[in-house]
Length: 382
Image 1 (cartoon, rainbow, N blue to C red):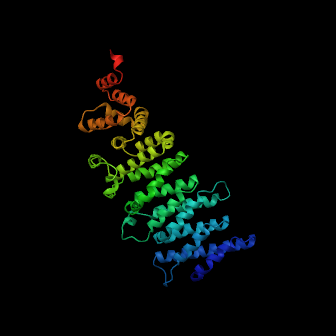
Image 2 (tube, rainbow, N blue to C red):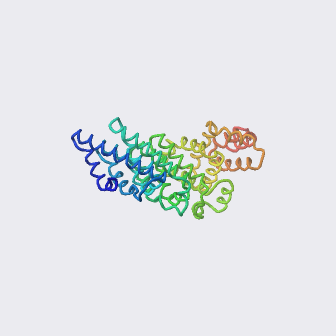
Image 3 (spheres, rainbow, N blue to C red):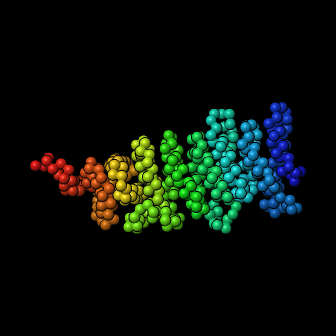
């Protein structure tokens, strides 16, 4: 009877929505029977004990499950998701071809609130865990055609645009997993994904923003070869060469885009700027974040914005526990790398008088601080 299951499975799931409890109970028993048969056949195949050429048609039935996993009937949806989980366990990487549809189902269930569909949501989380485990670094090869990366990325982008906080977080965790596991394939879509990540930074939930910054940091730290023109068109060649000595192209690109977003959306800078920069200093190297931002600010012609950014960066530098090591480094300028960092920050900090004086005091450059104060307030020194 398994050979006919793809033809009748759709009808069985519709029967699960019947009003009669007796009919629904019988249908559940039938589905359990078929589920046990599928598992038995698959186990025999895996052990090489099958005595015929019959194999379970997972492909035809998976499309049916994807359809019913989005049903408005909670009973139908739960059984469809449970079957999907079984298929993932039994068919394994054969299911990669259906990832966009399955991931869309998983993400949509995360928006449910309350107890009405709690079982569906919890089962979908289990499906999500199995989905992640099946994607490996082998899928980053161009020869691997099972996973439709473009459609999967589009599915995640669509989910990220939805209102549900939990759906956004689930989508961002997927992006983080993909950028870590199959970076070469996913980075071909970075120009589409990155603007969406930047806009998500304004979300009211800190949990969403933190999940977003994990993806942001993964992109910034990537060593995947980048387009040569990615930053050449936005910063001078000399600055690019200087920055590339310590950070990668995507790091420069990420910080440039972030500063551009802060400049165009001052409310984001005012409300979440300090929080975002502190989180990035934890996720990335604080020295590199400050050095790169400082260099890029010098390329801006908006002096008011530079002053505001320097004020924020200085406040974090003076007070944040995440920057303890950077403060210690700046207090002991004894080698070329440390002195170059001081010079780099000092040039930007000069756009804000209060910040540059406190910076000199922090770094124990007391004579320089005195000279700056004499220049700013000459009458007070006579």
